[in-house]
Image (cartoon, rainbow over all chains, first blue to last red; front, side, top):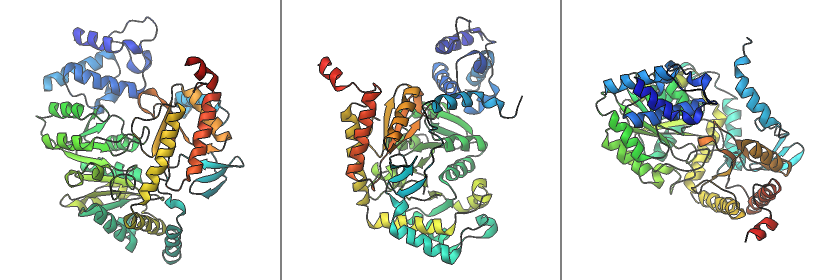
Length: 79
Length: 406
């Protein structure tokens, strides 16, 4: 889990607001400079990084970086 | 918290755009003078952002057909096809379109938006997959939301990326439907359909192509990119609209799939909205007949495309990578794009201001669209005004700078 969060944090660097570190508790919509398009592009990038499918249907259920990491891990299991 | 308070971000963005001196999303056409000209703020203005690709909105035969039908069939159908029945021309237009595409079946919708909404949300079921181009039109995204399928997005116009993503779904039992567009409405580029069809077939998936901006524009007879790329017989579904090259409003779905007509009692955006007014249907039938009788109309359009696309490029603007009737002039900064848009309007040229997130990758665009009804002089004057505004606002180097740089 921690390794996946760390990988996601790297992908999120361009969207950081100031120097606040990205952790599992970071709220993707509120704590980062991301609009809905940027979130969809991030999912596509993570699909390739982890070789999984992350359907757009998951977007409403993913609020924090931790939840996103769990989605990636579960997709990995299902694959 | 007030009901509409949550639109804070949109409100701020809109206010920012309006600070250019006018509202680009609230332009008032005081009088429509022709297919290519309107009176705006009291000025005769060249319309160069109307998607009126063949100029059929003011075609005398189309107007005559609509007028006659208005007299014989009235102003509207006041209900849906399943409740109020189909008029003769609804069925006839479906037959015309099926015939035009050489497909067995056609369903006509009240708008192009609803054609995508209805087709895509109904064709893919809860156990199926929709694999859509990342730059898809809002109607495709909304169809995904309305439907119950699992939705995967692939990189814009990238068959290798589609291949990879379909590969990941290889062990999933559901049907897969790939959704792409012919010409993309913002940048004006078109899909590499031959490659997309090959990838789709390799994975045993279906493919749906939205030809909204390419019907009546591409291919020898105007069928769109499916014809241009020679893959008409290999695509499963085509959607399109009557509000671009056909000069009216409405949408359609054509296919050879067995049991097609079951969609008429399953597709909610078809069932629960009033059908097209008969006069509109009559004008669309006439537009389609005129395109089929004279595909040379498209040559006039492409000659005009040359004038605007090459003119803007020669002036020094960055335009979309592929030449076509949508000419997207890239302006890096949205605020600057809004000022340029306003300056164009003050100089009698109307184009579309397109801003993120409606545009891909955060670009701002002065989105121009060319019509076969434009005169060469009109398009030359659009290029001249565009160049003048570009120099005035520092988007293009002024001649003095250009000389100094040499």
